[in-house]
Length: 468
Image (cartoon, rainbow, N blue to C red; front, side, top):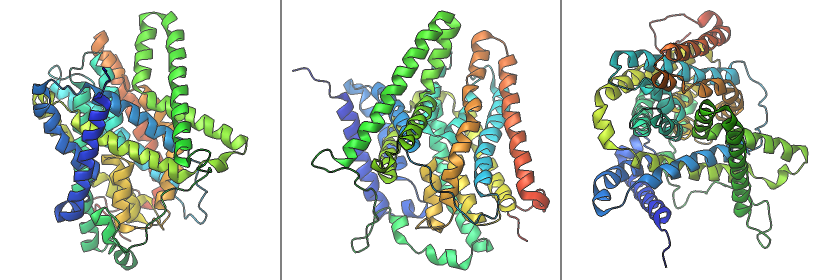
């Protein structure tokens, strides 16, 4: 019988690569020292396989793009269905708002850097090329792939592969740059003595829990397994929300079709940023769940596991989906932009964090650096080196800031197609409009930063780390 095995083959290859990467991380000190995520290692293992080994035998990697797209949306839904963490008392100020401002700073500065550098390479590159900096570095591979794929229909040849390449380089900056910052902080005395004692947890380095160590609880049962397995229940809830987002976009596409070609173009762009609509619908569903007092049947940790599963497979699959042909075509602007962006983040995040935050400055800086170059998982990985049990307020502050950041970032994401529209219409006014929008975000960040940092805003400007 003619059954399709493509999704199983892709999932099997990714799974094998993840298991191999986990074994390597647990045994090889290099991967432990630089805290390289297993999904990143797995993706690099799959990259030559999908580019050089499988195509000659007639196996394409087209399905990987679909897998990455769906896993991205699922990860956003799972996180958005979680109940809001309790507000943390005793803040000295600057925690939640500062974390949100730090993330938005990455969006604004990376967008401006990419857009201005793109002007040096036009017409050799597509006008949207530079916006892959914030997409790949600050947002992540899923978003870079999904939006880059949409740009391909707007004249950006290889847009999805370029976005994934920027994301992969961002991960490298997160891992290697993060470890450099940690070692620099220890050497310069930026890290307190009690934090240094917590860093002796070798499980963080190995990536696996030792045989005799107590295993942390990753999920709690909220249903009787005789009726329905708790994990099945949570997966069903996530998939139902995803189905609702599909129906919503289908309906929106139908309505926009009455606006002609412009409406259909807008609908196509909306499908490319489905993760935003999926997250919004999940937030609405969560509000209804809380309104009807049935939140007790949903477990935050289980939803986190679903999101974590999606992110691991998404990152590995996204890297495997990179076309090295297009990377070779754009290697010079790719190298120049990613290098300058990496250096900029390496300098600005510690500079800003040490002046803006009033507590856990180094830990907050590492978290922001990780999410400004990789994803939430890399930010948490760097934070765990300093705070293995997440006992500080840093992780909770980040989660509390996520809602504010998400709402503030919606206009930025909705405007992300403006440079591509400049290419389609031949009018650079759309390009300059995107620069103006990124500039407004930067202005907001600078004002917020000045309010939080006060007298320290521009104190000792030549020092990357401010010390009283």
